[in-house]
Length: 372
Ligand code: PMH
Image (cartoon, rainbow, N blue to C red; front, side):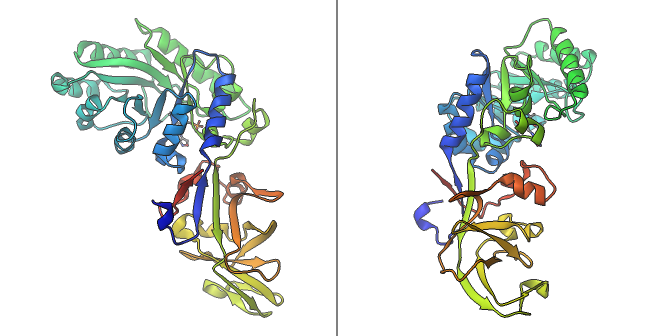
């Protein structure tokens, strides 16, 4: 959206230099031949796929990962050459589009390969695939050498399909206990070793494994959450090899200020009752923007002080209790820094009893993303 055509003051500000800083530091941490696959699925975890991808490319990422065909095509419309892989299962009828647009697919079923083989004569370029190994995540992938061989052989028999990579995904790389992680790594290594030829790109590590584990970098790492400056878990946060710079801030402004009297109530249900005379500010952001009702009680920053969201959060607005009388137009920081204080995404995640990943993903399309 054109910044000049934004009238509502609510916005997410994305600092692309923070994203680049996080990638550049990852690259210093990795061995020099290890590639960085920037995970930009779900609109780059809510940060904006195209803008993040371009910034990541400048910082040295060599491939992008998304979740769906639609996400891949959306990115391909702006990114001409860099390989884009889809991490999820895709329907057979997407294969011709993938071959044409140089989109790499994830495969784990020989039936899928056989169906695609029937159409592959018409591909004008070979279809690149990465074989997914389910080493213990229990989501998608081949689980045994036999299943792997069946998929691999089916691809070898097809003319126009090329194994570009093989990968797996860890369920517990961000936890202190390494038992399941160790087992998954073992299973993956065994399955990779059973292939007659090593594919170009073997990859397993997500953010957590890339930052805190040894011997798991293989040819590439898939860097998601910490590209955006967020630690995958409190365990990883304690062991980070470098400081992360959060990329997202969420800001708005007061659109109305009033004094209410002791006993007055605020918002739906009248659940908030003033205990004394109070100054209340209205902020034009609500649950339709992703500031869900569970965030009632969460503080915001205003003129360097903390002010709580009071009463029920409405669809498009919420109210905060001000430390004193303030002017309409006063800046409100819901996520990010103001003066000496900062509200981190972790604080929201703790309040909502969830993980940091969910927070930027839940900021809706209505919140314009502004790039700095
Ligand atoms: N690779 C795969 C296959 C993924 O599913 C994800 C994240 C990543 C890499 C990146 O992980 P990171 O952000 O921890 O670096 N996937 C998800 C998910 O499905 N739910 O939460 C995160």
